[in-house]
Length: 295
Ligand code: HEC
Ligand code: HEC
Ligand code: HEC
Ligand code: HEC
Ligand code: HEC
Ligand code: HEC
Ligand code: HEC
Ligand code: HEC
Ligand code: HEC
Ligand code: HEC
Figure 1: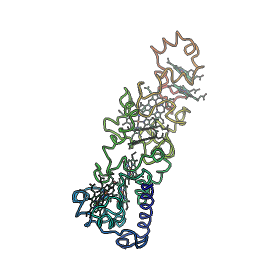
Figure 2: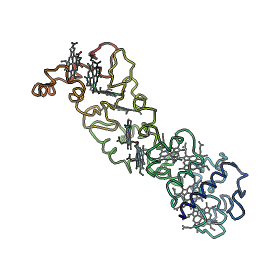
Figure 3: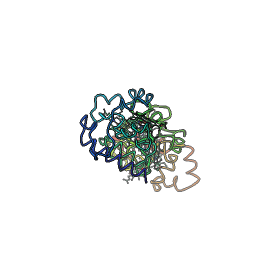
Figure 4: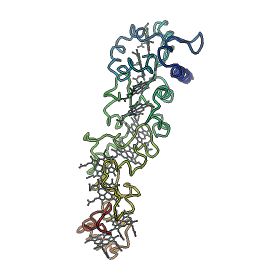
């Protein structure tokens, strides 16, 4: 109950803040005479010397001097601190995001961060699973310019063990090798479909593999429909990150063509060992030359 009240109070404070941006807000008492006041960063520094010193190296600290949204410095996030300071550090009179509900923390951060990617926050799986902003961002100790709790990919791998394992399979996207990150394809903040960065799965892939998207004179319908018809996104035991070995993959849709091969289990087995469908039908993503995708 107390947490919820704290969260609600914080939200009210944050709203009041953004309503009266800048230095006017400092010391102003929007909520009535009983409410604590803003005392300014130097007051916090007298007791929290270490946090005060390291703050200038953090992203918010670096921007705080020039960005009016952060004019209240420490108190932009912790709320007005006069009661806490006057009480010699009474911890019941200051907001500590560590002790707040994920929702209350997120509301605090979103009071300033509403633009671009973060507009999608409520659509994402993380919002719906109580993963808060501070699960991935550590505003006081973060690494890199995005203040992440760990490296860009390590931050995700703490929870997503299955994807980590997939990235170790024989064929995989070079994420663990550091050539790309999870955020190359995902917007961790949200997204309409699977927290993806682009508007659709096909567009996500096309960003880097434009040559596979066409348009081609002779389209292969499952390609335009989506790469996931044949590929897995993270990794696979099959070559080229295919969902299944080529022979079975093609035959899962084409079970009539080359009927003598594909319906007779003996010849099929021979075929699998000898010729692959793509030995002859090479341009399987589409072709400008041959209707049967043969070179
Ligand atoms: C008079 C000294 C003093 C001043 C001034 C002061 N604090 Fe504190 N603060 C403390 C003490 C003591 C604690 C408890 C320390 C602990 O448990 O490690 C504390 C704890 C906190 C906590 C953690 C609360 C919790 O729930 O554990 C936060 C956040 C905090 N202070 C922020 C601030 C901010 C922001 C300011 C400036 C507005 C400030 N403090 C000013 C002494 C002070
Ligand atoms: C952008 C928001 C933000 C700003 C600005 C900010 N803090 Fe914090 N602070 C947090 C969050 C979030 C936590 C919870 C721990 C974490 O996620 O790193 C926290 C935790 C703390 C704690 C408690 C640490 C603990 O271990 O419980 C203290 C003390 C504190 N901050 C002091 C300050 C002081 C002093 C300043 C200004 C120099 C400041 N903060 C500025 C967001 C902020
Ligand atoms: C009082 C307003 C305010 C609050 C509250 C706030 N931020 Fe910020 N934050 C800013 C500003 C301003 C910047 C600098 C943005 C810029 O210059 O583009 C920033 C920058 C950042 C960045 C780095 C952006 C980049 O492009 O590298 C991250 C990450 C971030 N904030 C996370 C958080 C998190 C997490 C919280 C909640 C614990 C939070 N912020 C709360 C105002 C705020
Ligand atoms: C699941 C982990 C995760 C969560 C939860 C998360 N972020 Fe991020 N955030 C990231 C990563 C990773 C990046 C870097 C993205 C990139 O490089 O493309 C980032 C980037 C940012 C940036 C820089 C600008 C941008 O959009 O890329 C801001 C600001 C930010 N986050 C704020 C927030 C706020 C506010 C919340 C809570 C509403 C939040 N983040 C929740 C992982 C997360
Ligand atoms: C604290 C644990 C945690 C961290 C850290 C985390 N996630 Fe998640 N993520 C979850 C949970 C819980 C879900 C929802 C359940 C599920 O789908 O597994 C989820 C879902 C997802 C989904 C599925 C979207 C969907 O709708 O199918 C994607 C994509 C994702 N996370 C990407 C990331 C990325 C990228 C990062 C790092 C920037 C990250 N996650 C960090 C816990 C986490
Ligand atoms: C090459 C692009 C790409 C990269 C890189 C990538 N993903 Fe994905 N991810 C996808 C696609 C595409 C989906 C399927 C989305 C759908 O079907 O809606 C997906 C789905 C997911 C899901 C939902 C469950 C599942 O496995 O289908 C999670 C969780 C996830 N990714 C996490 C991660 C994490 C964590 C990383 C980094 C280690 C990562 N992804 C890197 C493209 C990518
Ligand atoms: C950010 C760029 C990027 C995005 C987005 C991307 N890829 Fe890739 N893809 C790569 C890189 C880099 C490689 C490795 C190339 C190499 O090793 O030569 C690769 C390799 C592949 C391979 C070949 C794997 C192998 O074993 O040779 C396939 C198949 C593939 N990607 C499919 C996809 C699909 C499907 C999507 C969308 C879900 C996608 N890619 C999104 C960069 C990307
Ligand atoms: C009908 C099934 C199918 C669909 C749909 C499909 N692929 Fe492929 N893809 C394959 C097969 C089969 C191979 C292996 C070809 C070979 O090794 O001869 C392959 C190979 C690849 C390769 C690695 C080889 C190379 O030429 O670079 C990439 C990258 C790739 N596909 C990307 C994509 C992307 C991006 C999409 C979606 C736009 C997509 N694929 C849709 C079947 C498909
Ligand atoms: C998800 C289903 C699906 C998969 C998997 C698939 N195809 Fe297709 N393919 C189609 C459809 C649908 C057509 C269009 C059929 C038509 O127009 O009669 C097509 C057309 C073709 C054609 C041209 C046929 C013609 O009449 O012009 C060839 C050749 C072909 N596919 C080869 C392959 C090969 C080789 C593979 C495996 C790498 C494969 N397909 C995987 C659905 C699939
Ligand atoms: C040795 C070369 C070769 C291999 C291997 C091969 N094909 Fe073909 N395929 C052909 C030729 C040649 C045609 C053209 C027949 C025609 O035009 O009448 C054809 C035609 C097709 C067609 C179009 C059929 C139609 O009725 O128009 C499809 C679909 C097809 N193959 C799928 C496959 C699949 C699936 C595999 C793997 C199981 C495969 N092919 C393996 C040579 C091959």
